[in-house]
Length: 158
Image 1 (cartoon, rainbow, N blue to C red):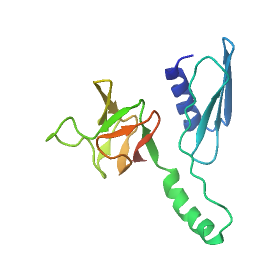
Image 2: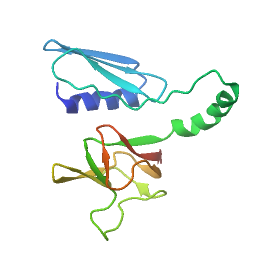
Image 3: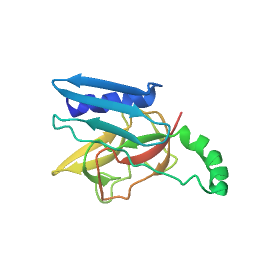
């Protein structure tokens, strides 16, 4: 199983209500679990597959006032879709100096529209949106290094 197949499985899990899936192939076992919080993990027990954890955000449940404000913000964040980096590299919002920025906050995107470029090993890879909606937030600064599966944009689906 290659990394593309694993990425597709993660996307499938995120889009459905499947809670957990385990696949065993050639002595390698992969388990993908969906949690209610925004973190997701891929576990392996060999075969050279790398773990791809998403950033986890934990809030201490001990204080009552933050717990009262969290439900108000959560429903709005639940409907947002994250466009993530498919590779490690350098994030660019425009094709070059003086060129127009691909997308800004408030811009409409549709599947196939280029939202940024990621440079990896002197190759410039256009990253396209896979969803239709409106850009709500740009999460990365221009010319910043990005990691695999790092959130780049938040999109409100149309």
